Image (cartoon, rainbow, N blue to C red; front, side, top):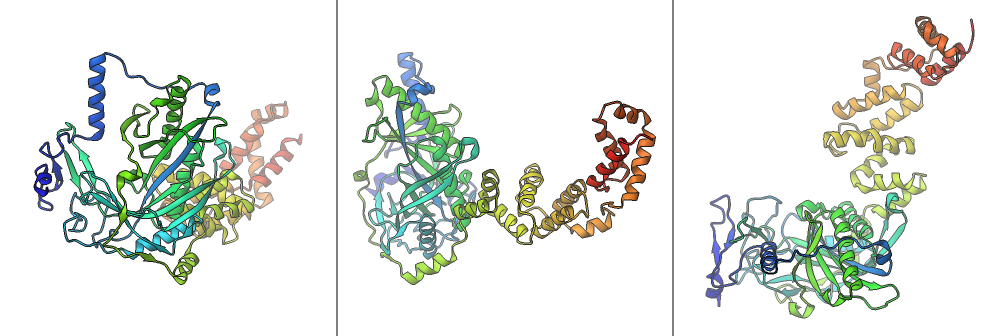
Length: 549
């Protein structure tokens, strides 16, 4: 049997060459070895060539048709944990490392290699379970999930089946204002621990695929939601909130582009009023929150059209891929049932037993989570738009909290962070932790403007220098002589000079062209190098403009 299998596998050296992949070539064991996508594309082309029929594409149904049906949506989310080593061995994992350079007999599934559980995986699972308001299983176990795929060297995955580490939780989200706003609560069915598989790299020709086992054995937490979502927007916001939670907890970087957070969406539809669920379809290959929303919207429209055309029997339980370029889903494979996986208890790993003391220690270490932070910001009087922006990124939230901790005005601090600071970070492609400005100096800048020491215009100039080069507000004010002019007589002299130098404009103003007030104010600010107090300047200017001499 072993000989039969390995006749279909070609191995390349593991470390000696840069492209050290395992390659499977056409051979005795499983002859078609191109990528799944390539196989289906080939099949579709053959079918198209035989029948000369253009494949049917689905367009969004009219609103009237969509309103007759209800979508039922659930999400399975895999979160890759940022432990220093893998789940069951001591190999490190680094995204983007040379293929097959971080593997051992355990990763490769070699006979006689025994797994040893990484305790950090359990700690992170308990953290996430508590953060998602779940009930923890004080005694859980691991199971073997049997299935064959070339990047799964053992031909089974170590996972959890009937006794997951956490069950029965929920997550709260706030929908963005542009999508109607509002609060939602979605149920969490379970959270369980498991290991990742390796990665297949398909060649352009589709003749063979290369196997990189660096990712094999990397620890994952799978979060299974209840089927509580009804729209693509709700599903995308649910996934985004999960990303925020794992980042706040520090258990994962949650980067979708690196595969650290992956979403598989399950969708069915049913006529309004029907109690039983329709046939469930799974969608994979969703690498952004916007693609989650768009894929769901497309799939709902596809299923509604089939229902409305009397072809509901064509909706089968299957896995479909989202094609970003074509903006549609295509069939990938028939979906396996639980019985196909032939679960049984993992004999090489003891059960996981938690103590109350251990759980309490983790509970006390939890940070303020996004939902609690949003409610706190709301109670400060901030708008929902402000709240969602500030709480979205833990680093931005910490910067804001540190700024207002020094008695800075809450609304002004939010405005500066969401406005000029956010624009600077976007233009320079920097995170808030990479700019030179500190929360202490932002608080000092706000206080200096509010107290009249400097004007808002000067404040902006100081802000950009602080973000680019660092330094202190008071140091820059002194060094550049930026203290605001608040002496009335000094401002009066400048106003008198500007009016004397612009007799034609003064005549036009007094003739009814009052918009010229802005012109005069600008000339005075230019003469004062931006240091004249704007409020006092406009007061004096109006007095003199409206006084005939």
